[in-house]
Amino acid sequence: MKTNRLSYPKNKIKVLLLENIDSIAIDAFRKEGYSVETESGALTEKDLINKIQDISILGVRSKTSLTSEIIRASNKLLAVGAFCIGTNQLDIQSAARAGIPVFNAPYSNTRSVVELIIGEIIMLSRKSFDRSSELHQGIWNKTSSGCHELRGKKLGIIGYGNIGSQLSVLAENLGMDVYYYNTSDTLSMSNATACKSMKEVFKIADIITIHVDGRELNKNLIGKKEFAVMKDGVLFLNASRGFVVDINALTAAIKSGKVAGAAIDVYPIEPGKNGKGFTSPLQGLPNVILTPHVGAGTLEAQENIARYMTNKLIQFVNTGSTTLSVNMPEIQLLEVRGVHRLIHMHKNVPGVLATINNIFADHNINIETQYLKTNDHIGYVITDVNKVYSKGIVTKLKEMEETIKLRILY
Image (cartoon, rainbow, N blue to C red; front, side, top):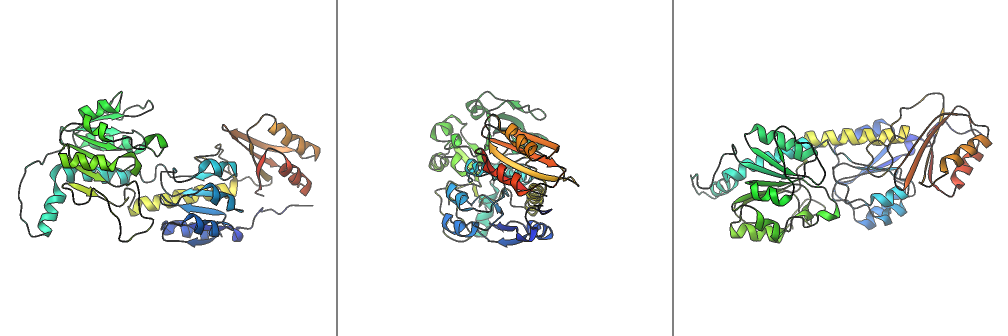
């Protein structure tokens, strides 16, 4: 029995986009022939379980949690796109065990975050927000007390990845001396100085900014003990993850004068939707800038993320490419004409590829090209064959004990 050219008609692929993902993504998916549903905010686990059952592609941002329960309810889910950098809100291992690749956008919003940090450093150094607030209240307070230029100041960066390293370059262009600490060895950009520990950075820096990832080990990375090591009158910024900084310890450090100013964009608990009701002990403190997780909140960043992520998801659906997936072995392939492509996701144990190829041989199928990539737990095989195959070969591949998911692209 012959298979269809397409394993799944595009008009049956349903996309669910949450949290106000840019319209570029909506347009791209619809142009591809997919049906698209959107939600302005995040969904609760219960609501997402109810919606996920007939969804093929899920697009989220930082407020949506993807749990193992949601994944178990996702009968048709092919892939998940995190339209942001972080994926700690997503159970990527459960997704991998279900054969669902998760993609993120690690580079698309870097510039926007860096520009926000640079702007906040200037505003904190000049106490501009306090002066603005006073003028809004009718108070004229022309003073230079506690205000400084950035030139010659020492900037300490904790986390020297895409954002930290680009921030380093711009800060040096403003005349700052940059010191950084990263858990893995990273070559410095320009004249930045690598430090052996966070403590070393804290003792040197006039301004400290945090740019670490969302791993569990980073919870309360900065607390009372860390603030005590910092210089008196230090400026402190966090636009990484809310749980990285002990907010109560930061509040106490500001009230004591240890920290002369702070800019915070992320919080341990954040609302799922816009509106009233947000509270923080940092509210009302002097020279403190609070922003509602808008580090990537520029039109340019959101457009770049939407364009990048939709391309990744569409490539996966059309070709099986998993390049830059955070939880699957990475393979990048072009669409090939005149062949039939089968994708096999399986548990990474010895002998699987041999079993797959024996099934092809038993059905007298010649392999044109074949790609295998594995990680610690998952094996990913893409096989192009030059002959129409029967349902029997599909059944055999699905019945393999190690099979997680089988997809037939064309």
